[in-house]
Image 1 (cartoon, rainbow, N blue to C red):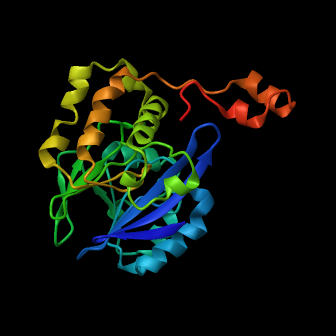
Image 2: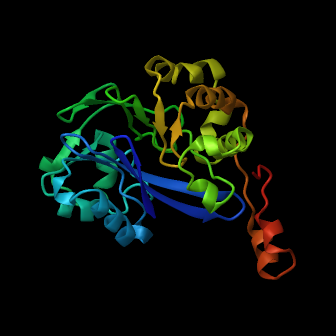
Length: 275
């Protein structure tokens, strides 16, 4: 895990190898503004490393807002630790996501700040405009635009496993072959947002018109290297997404054959949509 500085954003970079798919980036972000904002809190098995990386960016006590893009385990691993270390911080989420989180966590209501897509959060020196990203695995997902810097945080949307851990950790998406990125993103859409495979292309296109209007210069996905000046390529990928196919992974017979040594492990890891 390491920290990458991009303008006034600190990106806490992590990645995990997924057999047969490659290496999936797992990013969290710190907006270092007048009222610092932490976006997501890493995965539980890397809790200590996440808190150490966060502490290298700022004193957690200075955090004023914790924005959980959606309550999946790889996005809120250190949430309760951060709430404890940042007593002035409020948790930004929507009503349904708070209900979902309350099944596991006892979060006092005064520490919650409810926000809906289409509304904005005032963090002192800027406003963060909440929106629902066009691709998501949870209907509770909220990303945001920062119009003061031209930055968009898109949660899982635009993500995809890169071929190796090294490529998952590059400083900018432009360092990876565009065809490799596109194939990974489309395959991941079938894994993470399989509903898009049956979506009406025209209706789906209407869900990301606002991205073209906002024209973010920097797109930060939780599952992709930082993407500067890549908006056209990202929008082209979205246009292709309804034509992709949902992912079908190895089944139990494949696993048992691999465990028995009947097939090489690398062959067992290959998938119909391999990258």
